[in-house]
Image (cartoon, rainbow, N blue to C red):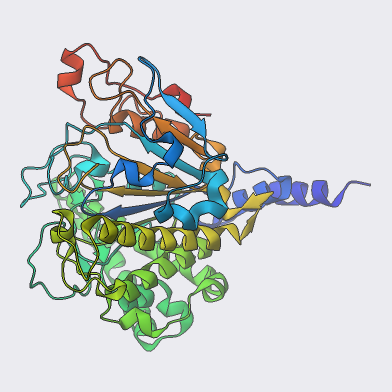
Length: 471
């Protein structure tokens, strides 16, 4: 007699999909992976948390490792298990086996200063601090998640808008474009700034909200009507115009597929939907940010998305909810204290709050079993600044904090990693880092982003992945 595991695996592998095969195939692959106990069929998940005002390397370095340098031509790499995390990272102590601190990768091909806009995740320069310009390529966040398709694709959530904005700007509502993430060249990722609207868009139809049902019904009627209309036009217009219609039709068909998926996922969506609290409509920044993190966790758990990018703040934001009412992020970054705290103490307080939210998300994912482990094992959460290593980043290095198992594909979790200093043999850029991550997840790109030509002129290669980062 065959074992229950073998019988279940045989049954699932023997499923024959009919007309819904395209929609159900990812689910069947996941069921098959679950039945066999393997992890290859599980979707990988990517969360990018982007702050303003730089991420100071020393602030995220365990004390005994401060001042440690990479040997010439190699890197400094050590396990974190024997080192207490810095005070502002204490919320991540329970996850230290899956925490990675990555330092020393430079980004001089990007715009230095208050922000690099798309450069932080797209590895290229923007025109100026007042203009993000057009993205040259899909950024690392969306390119990773595109390998694991989901009903809503990559989701952008934002507390505030662009890094450099007016001090008198009102709290953003609805869709905004912070200039940090892109779906393709010239195609910026839209971000939802209102947690309550994001909830309605993502969970409304399944949860029975009046607005959600209305939007869903309108979308259904529109898609049915316009898709047939465009098909009819395509048969009648000259061949030279058909390409334009094909683009429209493809977009409508993708929306129809999403609608079908959401209908089939109704129970799962209702089970994973967050509780709609007062924080979703609050004017207080920390309430809205917490609501965004709650939405992100629920979207990942429900399978609505496998990729989320959260814009944590901008330079004009005032963290009044943390008791910093006197100065905004910009002033604090320039060394001004607030409410009796020094600039460093303010920055530590803000960072500790971000890390607390990051740890909360990690804890939620670790609580969900998946195969022989948890969802966190198949997730990579990245914390970085769009300004590199300082409020006015020179981009000689670009610190990253990584949490999650990364699907076992990267040799980053559980380690502190420091590359050789800028200009030294063995030094690499964020382009090399992102190339390594993409290759680890099966995207065999030769090199991601623009190179640092100054380093290349100095005889330091700047192409390809860093092999020791890939398991």
